[in-house]
Length: 288
Image (cartoon, rainbow, N blue to C red; front, top):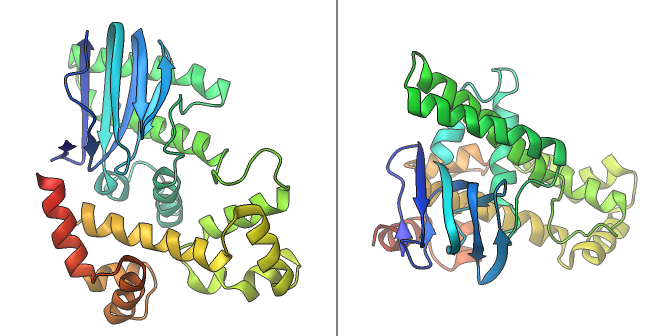
């Protein structure tokens, strides 16, 4: 099953004794917080035992379901790229473009594995009172309740992004060298600026030769740097094709391609079909 979100943002409260839907996917991001209850979370055919206080992030690529053991109270916070990119209150104007792009990249590159998304214990202690505040505003419907809920949710998204960023990328382990992690984080931060992620620029930035950089990167990530960058950019294009109404030339401009033809050639090399074909085929599938 494929679920669609028809608004940029929504909150749903549910108390359930069984999961009402079989294994399914979304066309949006979803934060799920467990207020009470126990059971099993299944995501991409892996399972995790949940209880009160756990929070999960589901991305548009994830397939998931819940096996509820004891009556569970859920909070579902759903949002899409339109919400992130159009939400001026997430960041100040001076920070806006760079941070929103980085935030999008981080959310898209969550691990797609089961388990609580909150790894930082301090952040975990912040989330619970935020959720309680959202519930109060939602129930009481006081003046400015919508504005306050939006601010609470924005704070939550930033906290979640920080927890994901602490463990990116998934191919790097705690045993990996610090410089390998620094290189990947540098690429993530500059993915919208092709001139900054050329091998010559990265090798100069980190003070190592281009030939060594290539070997070093492959050793620690099991793919070449060019493959890693290309796959990251393809994912950004896919997101815009499926979850926005941007024109092809607008996508090309935002992601720093020379023009629409350049973007189309790049995308077709990876996906085997044109931008238009991909959008038509996969949007039809998503709507079923």
